[in-house]
Length: 389
Image (cartoon, rainbow, N blue to C red; front, side):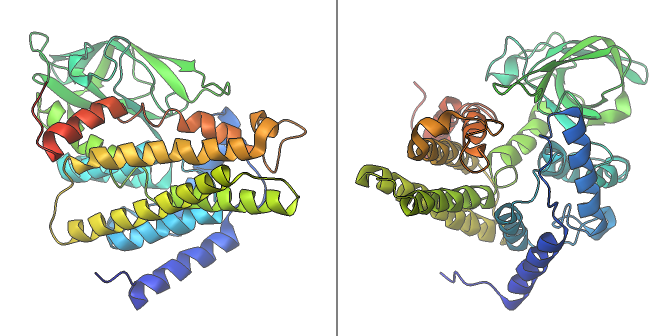
């Protein structure tokens, strides 16, 4: 196995590293889930787009650089290691974008992809419903066709970026007599559509990271359906594969967190803090696990570039990165002891105080993108070949 990078890949990595160092914001912004912070991060997306760094792995006609999957992973590494702002349009460029490339008409690609890449249109994900839990196939929101429109009725909840987004991609039931996976369709819904009401939902830290959506005879154009009517489950599984696998959580995110954890450990030692061997080993475990995930993803990326498909292994990747994220942040809080309880705004918070907020967010990882309990069932049945209970 050759683990070295080509000269072209190294040059690509150096270019994005230099650009980020010269262009990333020097001041700390408000969280992207606040109204002001949302617009700050949207403007950052536009700056990335103008330099062709918003979606480097996309075709050039949509604002990308047509870089390879390996180069994209290197981009993600440099991005997170640089400490650049979070990406406010993650739902669009990493989840819906790949789905549009696979399932969208040419008209849909030309309409949505450029504005998605530039940050002019920010996307939210509208899948979960109050009574469906992790069982997406039991959703009840209906969309009945009436001429050139669907009339949508129902409710969605836990819609990421839903409080401020411009568009929402939703799964709805277009055949009200259908059950389970049949009769579902995938709709692209403008946030200002007639009959759509949004109600922000706050996270543990109080920021409105989510929203509830209420559809009351909401009109959505038929040509905003992605894929055929009734094919929504297949389209959704393309999005879910991106969500659980490489696209949503590339290794760079966890490499950066692991490096910060090591830096925290060293800093506390320099301050004269006693740290038990057990806690030291937990720091090492987090760093090693982040490196292991990195090389596993590069291995999978290489296979994909040679014609392989992303299958059920996306589920064990999702389990690994989501639990790794929790472990890294929990170890940091144990290192910080009583100061680990302080959020960033607290006057005595250690450093920038982001470990607590990061931990609170990490706790959602084993839940979103399909709970880890469901993912373990998928791994058992489709990867290990174990029988259903």
